[in-house]
Image 1 (cartoon, rainbow, N blue to C red):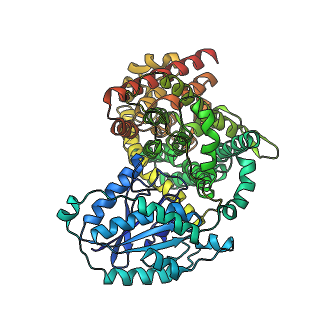
Image 2: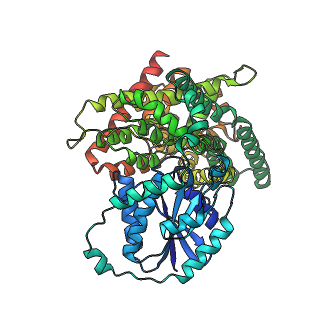
Image 3: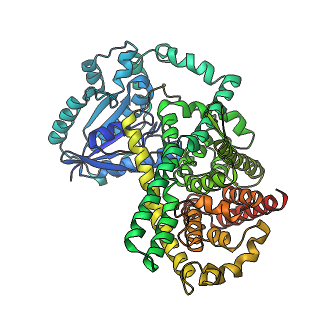
Length: 610
């Protein structure tokens, strides 16, 4: 299949254009570092490939190195029929600098190229017009004015691109191009400045409205207060806004469990469905709405342009701990999942700060911890509200857990910044961050992103939890049957490991669940659901929190479990990603052991002192 490739700088609307052309729902974000993987989809009879964003063909960061490597490979491929270069109409100079460098490279490889002048609706809003015909002549290539958000000009763009792709002739000789010297892009940089001055909006026009908002949000005092408020609202919303949905899911699981078990009648099959399926998997599914709310709020912050401001606000305080303002974006992303956050840390220019950021990312509370937090917070903290329900005590406890993870990460960063992590550290580059214009989120991709996050969470964790629940049920059910957990095979194993968890104020059931959760943190909830289901013999099928409360978990032991899960590194995929990014097995092994020991000590102190 012939291929059309889509290139452009970050924050230019490229991913949204890709979505509109292919119908795929891909992640759109207002910061570099999230497009380090190729995305492809079908565009009529062609394969459209969205390449990583880059600011220049003369690379400075690891992200840009990856982008240029992939682009060079595509240009050598005879199946590549056409290149689409996406330009940000509101920031024409930086877009044209990369675009004209890309055009020079395309000419060398004999590939036709077309420009998509995106965000044209923003230019119209500011009252700026561009002579598209003259711009096309000056660039020596077709230019289409479009808006991927409002779909303005998209139909004409599709028709024009397909016509050009059909007429394209492939003229690439890999041997000849490999022998050519590297391109000198100085002329392209000069031309991009001249063309931007001729066609682009004046910076004062673009920044007039933006500066009014930034004067408040980037102020030392008001900006800091606004930042704390936004973060508090983020973590409050995880519990407060998701509660009705969680109650609905729990009620649905309970009704389904009752209906199914009534059909099967008493016996081993009913016990299996109650304990392993509805007790294990059901207890886990209750917390999916919180994943969706977290993704929605972070997505709104990304798409609105606030995240870049938050990174700027955080630069000075983070620098005290040996970090960069760019560390904020991976840190916040890690609250959804640590793996893409670790990869997003590639955008940090300083090798030392990049490494420290990656090593402390696991301390950010990812979505896999949400079920554990939500379960134990519901057990330990009363559901009390203030200010007419705007502030929820359980939501405040959530904020405290997330804040503790962040604080621990900063303390560890401070320690690491004084150690010898990188012998080849060079002088730091100045902190430079492009601030996107403020925009309303594009709701359709955002909603699809939310649904996709829930789907991926269930698909990733569901099979693991099912297998663990099945194993626990089999070991806990036999040879004594329902209600005989103490004398089951699992009981024997659990009592053998119980001394390890006695200092934490926990019995063997919690010990089994904690050990099982080293496969994936969220397994803790499913494992406990299965264990309490077997022990409870059909009582309170989906109400795991009520079962734990009735069992008498102490406040100190419960808080110890929470702090254990804040700190302990219990994700095999995260460990593998850290190993791949750092290339050091010794360092990552020490990290896993160090975080594990620290987590155990904190849990023991809570159990003994609270």
